[in-house]
Image 1 (tube, one colour):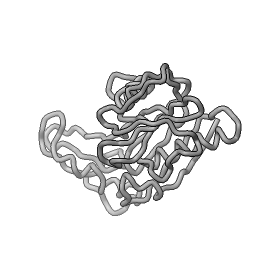
Image 2 (cartoon, helix red, strand yellow):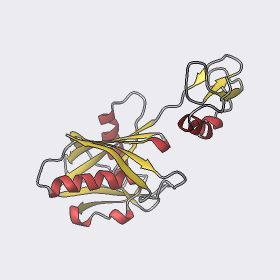
Image 3 (cartoon, rainbow, N blue to C red):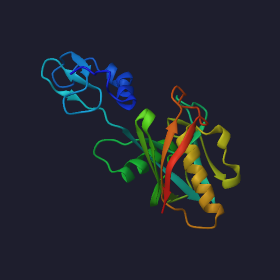
Length: 218
C-alpha cells in the first residue's frame, strides 16, 4: 500500500530513511516496493514477489566504563568515523551474546583488557540513527591494557583530565558527563536512562548538536 498525504510528519519521516535503500527481498531476492502496509503506520520495504515485509530495527551498541585508581580507561579510535578521537571501548552487539558479554568482548578487542562488570550504568537511545547504547561499569582484573586493532592509544584519565572536547560521539560525552556528575556528588554511580536527540543532518563526530531528553536515574 502506497503512503498517502494524510499521514503524520513522524510517519512520513521514515519514508526518507534507510528503508528506501532496501531494493531487494532478503528472503527470495525479489524487487521491493515501498509503502505503508495495511494495519501499520511506518514506511516499509515490501517484496513484490513473496509479499514479505522488511523490518528494520535499531542496532545495540555495548561497552564498558572502566574504573581504575579513580581514573577511566579511554581508547583513541584508529578507524572512521571519529578517527583520532577518544572513546570508551564499545561496539555492536553480536547475535548469540548477551549485552554484558558483548561489552566485555569489545573491551578485550579494543583495549586488550580483561574486565569484571560491576553493574549497568547507562542506557542511551539515539532514535535519529537507530542506535541504543548500553554501558556497563567495570573494573580491570589486572592493570594491563594496550591498543587493539581499532585503537591507536589506550590511556587512563583522571576525571578532571577527561578530554571532553576530543571525544568521539555524543553518547560518550553524555556517558562520561553523567559519571563525573555522580562522582563529584560523592555518591556511588547511579543507573541512567536518556534519549539523545541529535540534530538532523549532523555528522557522527559532531558531539555538540544534541539534547539529552527524558533523563531518568535510579
